[in-house]
Length: 184
Image (tube, rainbow, N blue to C red; front, side, top):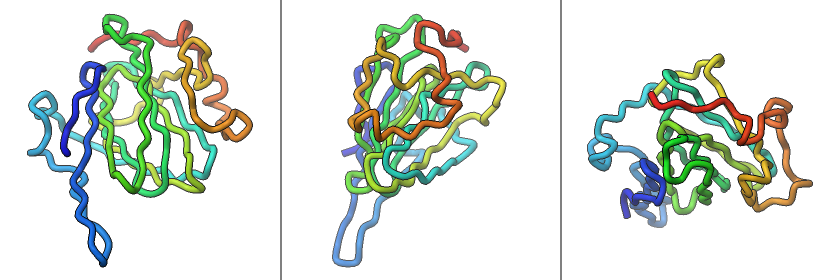
């Protein structure tokens, strides 16, 4: 258990140790001193939390530099399919996505660095999703991608008929038309 490097540069999965007994469980969800060396300079400035019902699909969102955000995301209760898309033009994984189930059983977390669009779909009846950010949200710097872009080929697991999408997310551009992400 611990931090596991993915095939996407800068993206990590955190599998914490969960101590369970007849009283419940205990888990350390974040410890600055336990970060991989690559993330040691990370400093979070904001925590966010959202509750959603089954079928809610939020994203795919990102922030443009100099307001780009790295996130450490987790599902506090319930289960979600978490998805990131690499939007860094110089990256070897540009335009590719990574999907990961996050839930209240495994307590896995995903570290999403600058340069990724992020979204999730709620698979359980209800889910509480929480994340830490290393920069403040700036509405004017927001970008997004269409969740159903055929060029991305994301399998959101739930049938399209169950998707609950905000009007804003339904109007996001396709990957080929999105606001370009330039390195900081």
